[in-house]
Image (cartoon, rainbow, N blue to C red; front, side):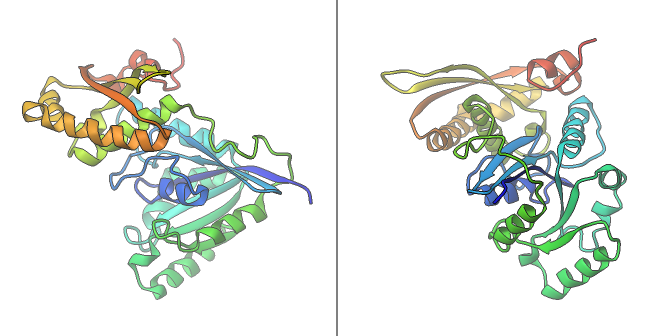
Length: 302
């Protein structure tokens, strides 16, 4: 049998469950997922291989109208990922968007779907939250638009119909040799995942604007033959007034953050680490080209 391999880009509005779906398909937690929107900032690549197939998933930031440079760069990741796609998976949260209007009538989403030549699949997520008739009604209404090759209801968080999603994706993959070894599940480094784990815990532990004003930078990552690996993390915020919120009374908030993050990092790496957190203020970093470039965002030199 000829090997089928391709890039599968997952798009949708913020908080529809894109990262949860990719993690469920992979059987590994590659992309951080929280209850807050705008969790994903860069595209995250996950690889699922079997004997005759290789699916290269691209999890993307939620589609929004950018308000500052960081969000513009997030949307650039979406556009590039759609361009790279052999299969384009568009997700709708049926609980939040019961008629699909927020998603499919969004100007950016519509343009991405129109311009893409990839095979298109619509995933109606969170169907465990509504009645079956609501899912059927939405699927029939969208089918009439003749945009998608397949439409499927799933619950990514409970894994309902996740295997069927994989089967449908595989049916649309082009014939091509595998790009990656079978045992590789991502192209990212340990440093990337450590920074994402810390950022995930910030999103979970803090409210309002603080998590969105935060960037996580790995300053040091020392593997030791004896003793625990040492990881020094800088948490970048925009305002001095956010610093006491992040640190908390007598340092309790950041101590709790450090403990939660360290435990998650230990589990992810499969070895114990010593994690040190520091807080730095970098005013308006989300709109600063130089700082965004330093933080690993694709900013053109001028």
